[in-house]
Image 1: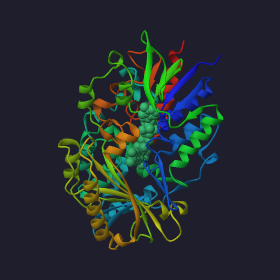
Image 2: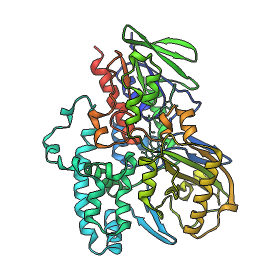
Image 3: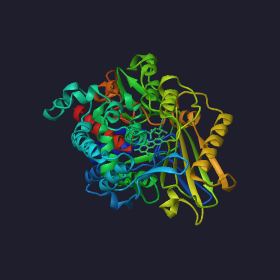
Image 4: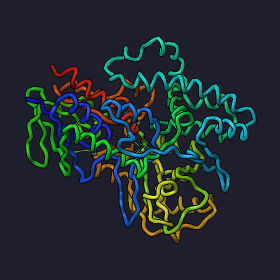
Amino acid sequence: MKKTIQIIGSGFSSLAASCYLAKDGYDVTIYEKNDRLGGRASQLKKDGFVFDMGPTWYWMPDVFERFFNDFDKRPSDFYALEKLSPAYSIYFDQGDQFTVEDSLDKIYKAFDEVEAGSSKKLEKFITTAKNNYDIAIKDLVYRPGESPLELITMKTIGKLNQFVSNISSDVRKAFDHKKLVNVLEFPVLFLGAKPSDTPSFYSFMNYADFGLGTWHPKGGMYEVIQAMVDLAESLGVKIQTNADVEAILVEDGEATGLKVNGKNIPSDIILSGADYHHTETLLLKPYRQYSENYWQKKTFAPSSLLFYVGFDKKMENVNHHTLFFDVDFDAHANAIYDHPAWPENPLFYASFPSKTDAIAAPKGKEAGIFLIPIAPGIKDTPELRETYFNKIIDRFEMLTNQKVRENILFKESFCVNDFVDRYNSYKGNAYGLANTLFQTAFLRPKIKSKKVKNLYFTGQLTVPGPGVPPALISGKLAAELIKKYDL
Ligand SMILES: Cc1cc2nc3c(=O)[nH]c(=O)nc-3n(C[C@H](O)[C@H](O)[C@H](O)COP(=O)(O)OP(=O)(O)OC[C@H]3O[C@@H](n4cnc5c(N)ncnc54)[C@H](O)[C@@H]3O)c2cc1C
């Protein structure tokens, strides 16, 4: 008889793991507490508008390709992918934008226009970044974080200095112009920490950005979730929604099943893709590996205040992805990481998927997603949400030189309290545990429980880290470890 595996949650990591495990011959069931699948990559549909509620940037297409190839499939078997042109733009002031185009040659030219001769420096920077990408994303991140020895290879020994220096100082050494510094520091924000706390080696994110480009699955990121659900089900995975896991059952130090909606369901192996901290609360205290103090001391990726807005007209002077970096970057970072508080003048990001994808909004209208990164765990009230909406809409109107407030058909918001209620997120973090030097690889919470036999973890709080591509990889790593130890 097939061995049974129960998986908690239906985010990217759980779905990925379920596919590998079903392919390996296990009897796999996913239990998701919400009525919708996909975890943080959820979707909101309203009055003909379609919004991705979480991820909107499709980076590292090679990782998605590799995932589907493992099942003799390709992304194009499930969804249509478009390379965005331009990739995105950044506002630094009213009418003052830097546009990141869709090829390195165009980006080199744009750098020279801002700082004469900077393209040569950028070429050098990107050569290193590409080399790091080849080492990290094609190899290192596919190692399970069981031992420090995994990181020691002929290629990484020569890179040791890049683990003691940081992205921020590298960029500032090479480039003078504030705009170029901000442009180059942006990609590592996806890793969840300040550029000054992110090792230089992570410049592979700059290669992902400039070298590989920004892509968009037609219909939005939720199409990728749908593709993975279809793949999982075709491999025999069973999926239950509205299935709240209340406890992980353990007998004599061995996981024996789950308590779901009040009912005990036996299983041979348990894998959790829910937030690591929450999963541990499903265990009796002696079976938990990490104390509250441990989690308190960790650097978490930011939470976010998000707005999903339906506009009754098309927006001008913005791209599919537009960043608003017209205020002090360091002051906002300080309010996220050093002295957690609402930022006085927030940086923000806006996405208008209907600029390139007709599915996202009715004809002549625009779907707008606005995101302000904020510290996890800070106070979240309807009044604060409204204050910050007004702040960013005022700035948006001024910077993009248009009036939009009267054109709002509806707006929905999502913030710290929703992350906690909906995803059982620790302090309402949006995208997990940051990738700092001391929260990398074997230094992250482990995939395999050290205290409970047959209990495993996957997702953005374990290896390799935050983001959709890492979540796909995390699912694969967890499935491989389960197979390795299932003797
Ligand atoms: C606003 C936002 C923007 C982002 N932008 C990007 C981006 O542009 N590009 C990118 O690559 N990444 C982005 N990310 C990060 C990316 O979305 C995540 O890293 C990834 O989706 C995490 O997947 P996961 O499987 O680790 O966890 P999750 O998606 O959180 O999945 C965990 C699941 O477990 C379920 N669960 C929790 N507790 C229980 C329980 N007790 N019982 C049953 N089910 C339970 C939850 O409901 C959830 O469905 C963004 C994230 C957010 C929130």
